[in-house]
Length: 339
Image (cartoon, rainbow, N blue to C red; front, side):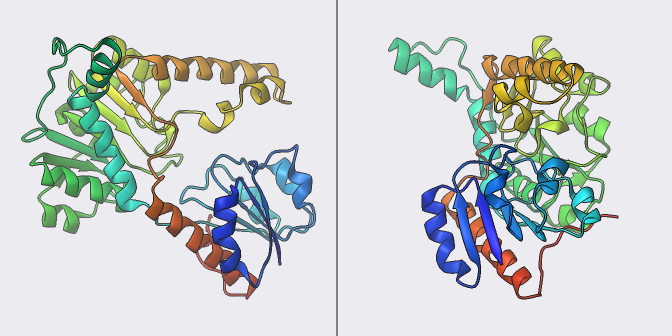
């Protein structure tokens, strides 16, 4: 089965090749776009990461396609419904970096709560030991609000409890056995927003979680709370967060993801795409809003690297190779199912 991998650097390709001995694997370093999709024209399978949008147009350009394998747990960068209508399977790496992302969330929390970035810059740039304005606060005894208690969210809860924090959780599907075990509790979203000193977003992106934090509820956040998002940018309405930062409702934010992230990575593509003028205008407005967040002195912004550890990368590549090999042998695994 010919499989073309997009967005794979040579080092990753060298790791994957020995695991794909039964597959005709080819590797493209660039992400998948309409400009290079022809390189997979006769492929039966493609493998992508979240920075490759697999749209209807991309799918239609691949007449032999049977499988889309994403090297991620999320799959909102793929038009799964259209793929299914064409008889194309989609598979994911459902669990990787569950400790990796949780640890990164706390790296952001600690950096915010103790003003580590401005302290570093003051010493490194100004050669100053002046501590004015750098006073932080202890996590011990504070309340951590965890929105989304899947595998990553559960690890965030455990770390928070290890710091001696009180933990409140919110999830569409509560796991009360877990919270009883670790000494946390589930509350409704308004209660969580109003009681948490630190809020960590760990929910998947679905139609139910779109703009989970929005203009209507952002004012409910406890004054001076910290907000960390290592999940998906679309969980937050960007304009609402900007407002909350400006009026001090949110004292600081740690953002590894941004709303419209994939569409806005390449500004040139956004401007010159076939999208109509209103879509381009909306995209550019979102780009400016994201830039406002990135440049804010009260935001620590990172480029979607919470998952990026040696251990998580090895797991992603291993499971991806298994997904493709299993599909080629007629025993598919980790398939996305939609109604």
